[in-house]
Amino acid sequence: MKRYRLLVALPVLGLLVGCGGMETDQADQSLKDGDRTTFANDARPFKAALDCELLINPDPAFVATRCPANPAVPPADWVSTVVCKGDASHLGEAQFVGEHCARGFMYDGGKGVFTAANGDQVFSDYFGYTIGADFDEYGRPVMLYMQEVMTITGGDGRFDGATGSALNAVNVSIDHSGPFPLLSVQTTIDGVLGY
Image (cartoon, rainbow, N blue to C red; front, side, top):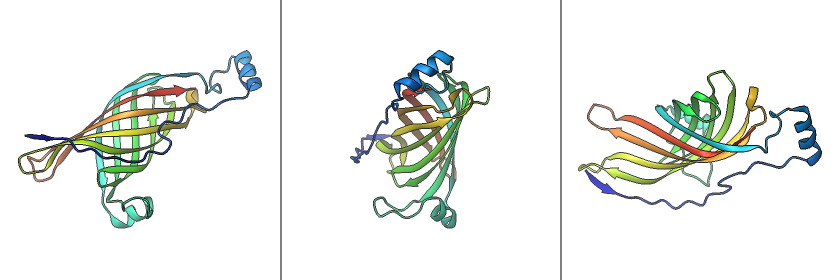
């Protein structure tokens, strides 16, 4: 297998959104009440290792509805749904389900939900892009190395009002031995979570 590195330079707007500020009176009252769920500035490291399945929907009508045309980015090729399981800090054994618009070697418009073992949820937006690839002797990609930017947008239960961000490593392994390529996805999340 030949190994090539492909670098993609993309302007990244708002890469990491830090935890927003609360008014001092709100924070003081929150601490007096012992209510940690509304004190979103208490940022903690957020890490996860997830194994994922990727489902692809190339239906043009669905893609056009989910991923409207935007002159700033290439048209979407398909809509991907990703279902992941693994260990995540603060959530324990967790599941992540997300959906995004695939546009060549990048994806955007991602909306995802982490669900903890007890049912509490963390909501996120995300986008990603390829930073490298390995190809086989026929020039087919066999491994994509991607970087993903995630913003925590809220939650429920213990994570109500959660904020945070993460810069994630996504590795997509592609097996071409069968009639259709098989994809295996591993995601490593490294960020902060405030709740």
